[in-house]
Length: 403
Image (cartoon, rainbow, N blue to C red; front, side):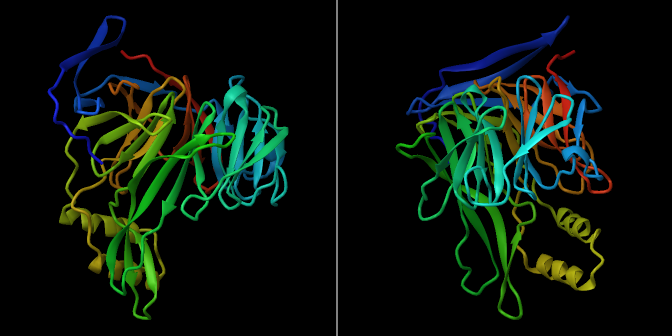
């Protein structure tokens, strides 16, 4: 989805001053509007001020001995309250667990089941108005609401969209953002690349009219027809995908074929387009070889190795790599974009922060191996696995000061 630029540029070279002490950084953006009044912001690919997080977490939840509710298994989502308490959806036990500001276990609610306050597939956790906890269940297609202390409130069933149950993506005050993935169709007996579709909608939390934001290209895949005529579906190497984030009065959508974000209002109106003036990297032959080497490096089973090798012989690689690999948001209205890097590259991931206005303001490097689940005003929280594979939820202090 691209915006039609048929109207004259109204302003250019908008400078943003960022700094601390005597240091300042001027970053120029180019702004324009299209024929529908959509604001377009183009950011240059230039060095940015650096925000930082502490090297060690100040909260670390998760141990191997299972004491005091510390035995996390598939912690899909986590949220942190203003008083420092943390709620985690623990997938294996279908529980919502609560911890104090030091990471000590308080209580758990929920269990496996289909009754009130129970889950078949606990998933995303979000905070609504007055810190009401909203928990999704992808199998039961419903939301369960709890009080901030974990008392069961009520259940909200989600009506099917195009014959399939939607899932929660985020919350805008009293409006929920839902999505549904439509899987690729049949491949007609041929080994071909295919692509899923994301349908993104909004509706009032307590029911009402569902508004369609749009349909977007999702995960790129490849259907391989095996000798026995069965189909094996693979995520395409360097496959592009769609990413979303919800913050303030915006639903942000980015399809990683290019470095472009689209900002929609709660009623589905496109309000802004944000771009980074950076070309996507081409997939070269050396990249294909390195991708296969990376995949085979941890595989000892000969049959599985041959399966991977046969797949790489027939797959059509994309011409370019993804522009980015994740979107997140924070309560201050920033949208965060994780720049893409090939899977064999080690080091700390780099995130780029954009204001709601579309201006890029800073970059942040996060600990290697940390899968960010939430960014707060002064912290970053996410899933981290130790060398033994034990899952932890860790919280790091975030400084937005630049030098």
